[in-house]
Length: 183
Image 1 (cartoon, rainbow, N blue to C red):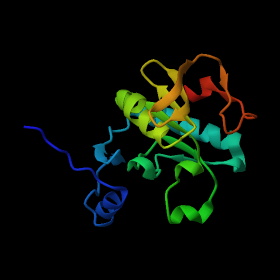
Image 2: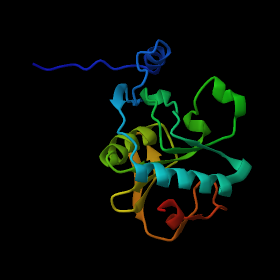
Image 3: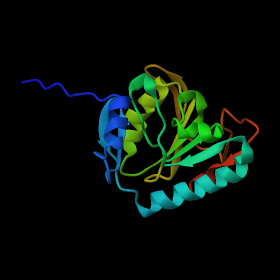
Image 4: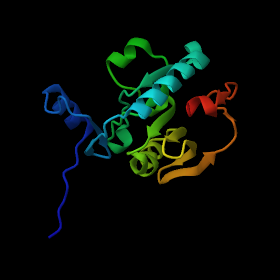
């Protein structure tokens, strides 16, 4: 017997949140599925927090650095919560909506137990939504994996970044130390 899974829309998901159905649950909406998020271990919390502070310092007023906050991807009924989202500074506009793809400069996930989800599921979702750049920090191997050139089917470019520095596509004049991202 084949089962058909019920898919949720972003509106359904927001309604569940509003009535408290998902209260005290660490979940995110990925391609219409409500997915449990792994607990954040100490290394994940430490490295992502340090990286966010470093990026705030580097980017200044040019971008907002959001940690563990939702983004809305209407294209594929997803509302993930990336570890770090570098987005446009829209001020109070974010009272009415989370950042949309056109507001996002790039995303960063720190991954340990969620590595396969971040490299496969989330990479496809972000690419299909048109997120220009997506970085995964693999905490198991202490390496930076950079995804660029999104298409509806996935990113055309994926590489383990070995140089000591990287310049994000949105800010080619900003040089980021990979060692600082890796702790």
